Length: 410
Image 1 (spheres, helix red, strand yellow):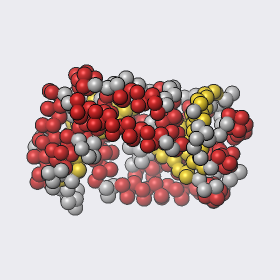
Image 2 (cartoon, one colour; image 1 turned 180 degrees about the vertical axis):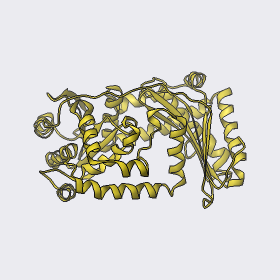
Image 3 (cartoon, helix red, strand yellow; image 1 turned 45 degrees about the horizontal axis):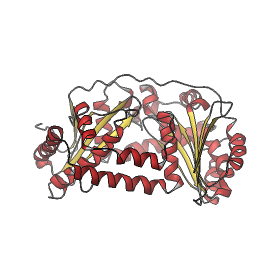
């Protein structure tokens, strides 16, 4: 494999991983913008804009964009998160030129009023759909509760009020401010040569407006907070808790990911054996979430409403034991094998490499191979986990409950 990085005259960052042993190529624009970059008045605009990007422009209509992608046999989509909006397509190598032309259209949509009015109803329906899902409600409110007063606490979808009040002019202003070439990374992974790629990139990406924009990185104030959302129709009680963890550029992020697998993976972890396997709960897990300038542990449990206190106590006992005594060498080796398998399996596909390639460059301006990731996982020891726990113990400071219970004894 070969890695190449360069910048177009308009400021667009381009990162390329060439791999002649695969049979496809994946390309994606990583726009460094998401819900944390919005003001409360335009909450949800990043996700709404992602939808609007597929409405096309004066060169390609919405029907054209979707029809041609389908004709190419492309695997294409987009996603919006707290910090990055990603637009991608995976195709056979001979169709990359056409796919790149369409992806460039997504970067420069017309944002017509009629399309805006129609898509607003779709977004409101999506908000209503997720409002019926307790797991989503728990996550959304946990982010808002833990990151209270911080941009990361803003909802990706926005609220009914913010979407209803949003105007097309506000969206156009947001697009012109955030979708600048200096705030976008184009990543490409797969089976093509540099001579084939460079003319395609320059032809389709040079028209993206030049410029840069900034992101604020305020500190997180993690006070003790509890929020209960009563849903009497829910058959289970859902509880999510969050606490401080390493930020996205912290070298301890590898140890944090490993610890989350040991303690909270969906199979073979401490929470699995203590809570899920005996049948105490429907689900229990611990995840590590890394962000730009922040990080968080997030634990989740769902069970019968009357049993939630007992199961939260069981979960806390697991956390207390890990904080006090660390983890065993056997647990570390098993978790490293799990992580290594996931890294390799994901890395065998250009689409998997695309996510890693673009994500690492956006967050750390760093190119990492599969071998780099495997090396940094394989070298971890119980001592590394101990150092991590000394700095970032499994100590949750926010609690959000969703279900029939109107109070919890914590």
